[in-house]
Amino acid sequence: MTSMNAPWVKHPGYYIREEMEARGWLQRDLAFILGCTDQSLNVILSGKRGVSPEMAKAFGDAFDVQAEFFLNLQKSFELSRAAEPAPDVAKRARLQNSYPVREMIKREWLEESDAALIEEQLCRFFRVGDSSEVPYLEHAAKKSNYEKREVPPEQLAWLFRVKQIASQIAAPSYSEQALREALVELESLRIAPEEVRHVPRILMNCGVRYILAEKLPGSLIDGVCFWLDSDSPVVGMSLRHDRIDNFWFVLRHEIEHVLQNDGQAEEIIDASLEGERAGVSENIPEQERRANREAAEFCTPQKRLKSFLQRKHPFYYERDVIALARVLQVHPGLVVGQMQRHLDRWAYLRRHQKKIRSLVTPGAIVDGWGQVAPVSI
Image 1 (tube, rainbow, N blue to C red):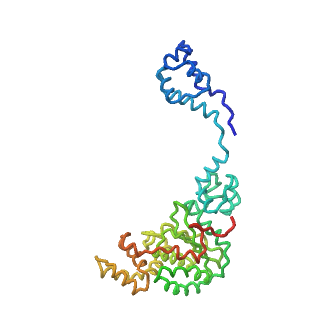
Image 2: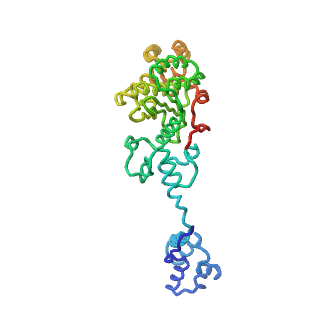
Image 3: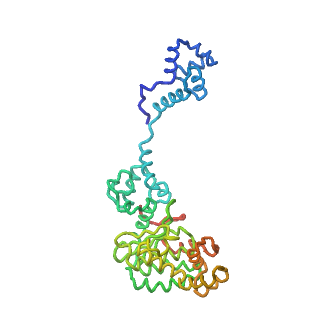
């Protein structure tokens, strides 16, 4: 679609002729001053050719004005005659500024379409009736609860994808007793990385929908706990850190939320679950302190670890760490992860923090890393 020509925006040649008339110059006079032929000047004066940067400098010297004056005249003229962009451009920009829409399309959370249909899909994705209710969209009628809780858009989109997947999973009713009993079986899996493959089955048997979803770029999401109803808890994990220690810590953290019935009123979203946020200081909410405490204890019994650190201070040899892990019947990577946190030495024995994503995803419900969960958009 082309724009309507603005008649008041003239070609630079029009204004150059005005300047010539003001000085009483003929075309051949200006050609002489510029050191060019009448013909090469005429195509500019007649509007058949634009003013190049080189000619703008020459006209500037000839008329004793800044070269930018002629370049701005040329730019204004060209813009006045440029085709109007498709209406989708501004709307796509607004959508992309609010959410990583391009990445969501790539992940097949949304279908590629025109901007209006993408906006409609966002309404369905976020389960609202109108685009004015979609959180973070510029024209939203009012701030949503998520915005008040300062949940970043990338994390919010990830959360709703997990919700979308969870709502289409058939699972038995949740049993708290079964989940508490399952903790014993889960503890037995800590010894070797490949044992994580049993986790999805164990949780499903307890009535916990367990979903692994790759995070969106820029997001620091680690996990989430929420309930579809009073009998249907959901645990989602992003595997943001593909390490055995982080896997078990985040998993046990989310399981504790389920056991305490956290997340029934509103989702418990865990992001940047590391360092101080994985601790038990007073500035952390009580439900998070409790989940962190149980997660740390699950990875490595804390009294045993503190005793080890006191006895071996200041030299923590690898052979001693491996021996402690053997006694505790856990993989050395779990001990290392807890030691890193206590010592604030994040590079310490990092080679023991084995990758587990490729081991747990084959038996789990997965969305991301090249896989798309089979759910309707």
